[in-house]
Image (cartoon, rainbow, N blue to C red; front, side, top):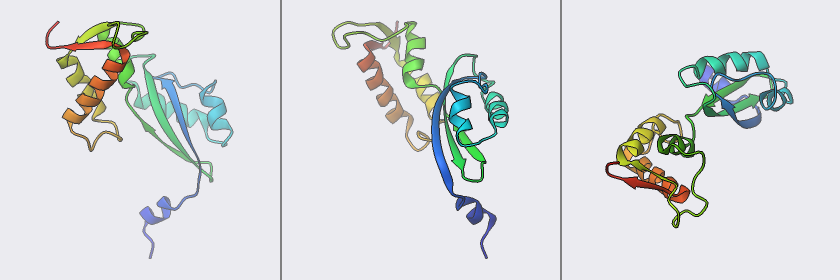
Length: 154
């Protein structure tokens, strides 16, 4: 006999939708409305759930969300933390990275900033199996490619 988990796992998937939505700012207007509307998903249910899940973040923080739309017009979604680039720009206090990374330094951050970003990113579903050290190395690479220098102390 099939268990409930087996039955739920076999639902046919209509689409996987990836969006970046401001924290607490999901509204039935674009980009959320058209993306979900074409699969006949309940926009208001998504907006209420998303806004409730992202209320711990400051407003206008860009949050990545992956929505799995099923053919029976139901959906599930996974909320991820903001991008590493966004965290690095906030920590460095710059609007954008260097135009010439490796030649021009846009700003600098400390190793502690990198560690704090890594602890936040470790909660993401895609990073939960990685060590903090591996996530820190990835963040350092992103910072280098943005022209942000990493120092021991400011």
